[in-house]
Picture 1: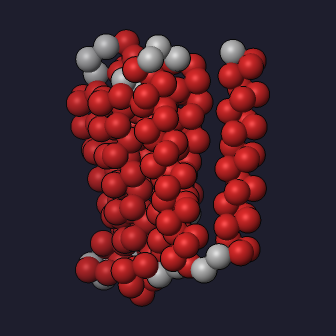
Picture 2 (picture 1 turned 90 degrees about the horizontal axis):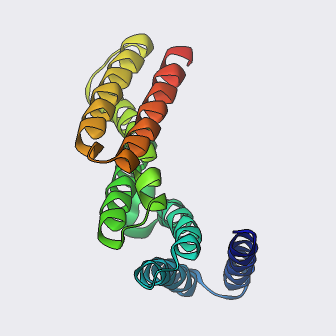
Length: 193
């Protein structure tokens, strides 16, 4: 396990320095192609390693891939691809996190990896909460307390539905615990804000 952690850490460091080099020396299009290629490569490598029985290494690479997918969502907004920088920030991040969560859950089921499943379930409640904030501020003229209360309630309901959908094995129960914990965290943030 120690060698796997060291190997994945070195690979992550190499990826970060490669991306910094690309951001310094290339334009927006080339940077985006390089970041996208690194993300897709990490997802494919993790899935392939899992099929070959190298589970620990695959999970480490999958963690890197999951991080890169979320960073890609950030880069899309920062570089104003498809005109998304003009959209409401809460709506963008709510839908981006929801898409990331759905992708992670599907990826984990197809490739039989645990890390994307945990990441996907952990993103469900924050995605719903942030999206709910964006929708309610854009559509409904509510005061801040009602807004946070409704968003937290929707996040809690969808987290519970995520728990019901994910419970099929002891591993799924652990992921459901992550989803419940992230829902409680979102609820706490909503009340404290």
